[in-house]
Image (cartoon, rainbow, N blue to C red; front, side, top):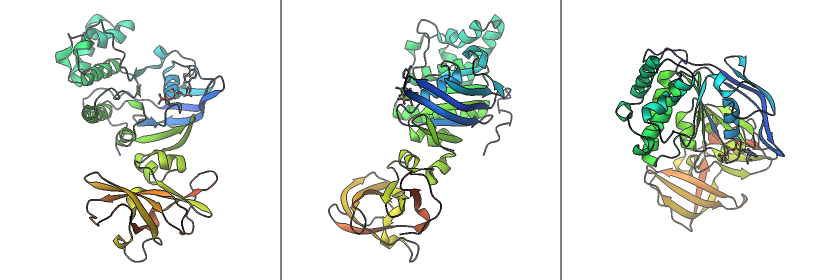
Length: 359
Ligand code: ATP
């Protein structure tokens, strides 16, 4: 893993601070939008907040920014309590989904705006704007107005405006969601490179799990104002803390099977035809009646229903094109899972359990 304290390749001074929430809560009348969150974002870390709509991502980010007052709890930046400091005093920069560029100002003036507002001398402003513009490759666009830019260019202007003040923390709220699919991929790549180069602590909100998996050093999975799991993308994917995380992360989601006494979980790519396993590796076979086959090129998704003795549960298998066995809708096949790929969850609470007897 990257060392957050390493100096950025550009030679620019690394700006990074820890960001900490302690029992942070925000209530809107009866709704607990953020419900007692404890979170420590490390220096230079790229942390992604992900969760379904309404889980409290934006409210949490707005509290970090100082745009929303917590009902209770504390916030610290670089170890200093900032809970009641206004946004301006926090040395953070926020980029929204809408970019919020000033339409009547040129790109130059948009980027210069936070510096002017902060009273930076004119000559210094010019140097900083040029440096930020160069960092994002938008030097040619400085005279244009936002309406004369593509979505991707606007995003870069918003990012340049965010970095120009050398913030210690970046807060990004779905900054790529206005871009088309192709541009999103390249913008994601660029964003990651900039963040690595600057080494600025970053909190990034998204509901897109591909973005979360690809961008985050760690991912915090939220639901109903609480963090269900905080871990690296691989930890969250391979070792989900509970059935919520198991089914929220991963597409298609993890298969869950109610058995006695546990809920069994297995990823679609681990549910494979019985004959692909060496003897002894696999569970007893799951008889599966195929209801649909979806051809995705590199993969086939096999939708099916388990037959007795298992409860009639719908499951999905993802077969790589390297397993070209014929599979037809309406027929029954024997599938299985490698024993090491089975996950066990508490049937009542959904929480992960340690190893348990395989079926
Ligand atoms: P989305 O992905 O849809 O943007 P989110 O995870 O960012 O959702 P929030 O916007 O933080 O969710 O909202 C969390 C909860 O708080 C929701 O139930 C929302 O309706 C409620 N909420 C947010 N802002 C307010 C407000 N100003 N007044 C009342 N309720 C609010």
